[in-house]
Amino acid sequence: MALTKIGDAGMPAGAVLQVVEAEFSTQTDISSTSYADSGLSVSITPTSSSSKILVITNVHGFINGTGFIGLNIVRGSTQIAEASKAVSFSDNSGDMSVLTKLDSPSTASSTTYKVQMKVSTATGTLRINQQDGGSRITVMEIAG
Image (tube, rainbow, N blue to C red; front, side):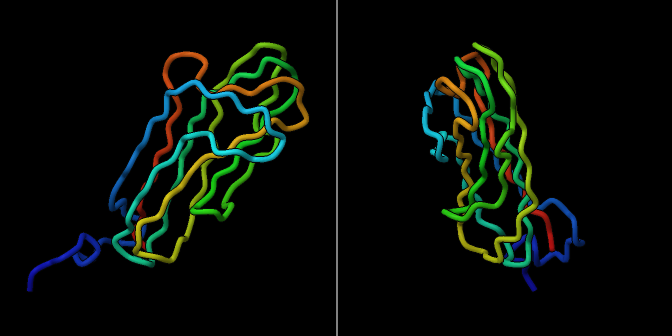
């Protein structure tokens, strides 16, 4: 009998089946107090509908004001994780923000995860990728 997918090999629960990463390095301003797409997204096609997807984001944010920024991870259009006050900023400061989530999409179809950001209890404009290095999103399929 031929194996057609990694999942057919009987990988134990918790095994990493695949890893996909995307980088977004375009400098983008966000002035909205509602979540807006940051431009950072990645797609993965799970090998099984019982798989879980570990989402790891690493976002380089900067604000030319004070207060907090919000981070949001969405699968398609469904919110799966939020940090409404992810980072506190003083005037003209930047920071790298990390937000993770173990998701159960219950599908073997292509699935897109993206990062949204907003100005949360802050003044000024939020900017992603002001300095070198860019932002990343990594997804890992975990056997269920």
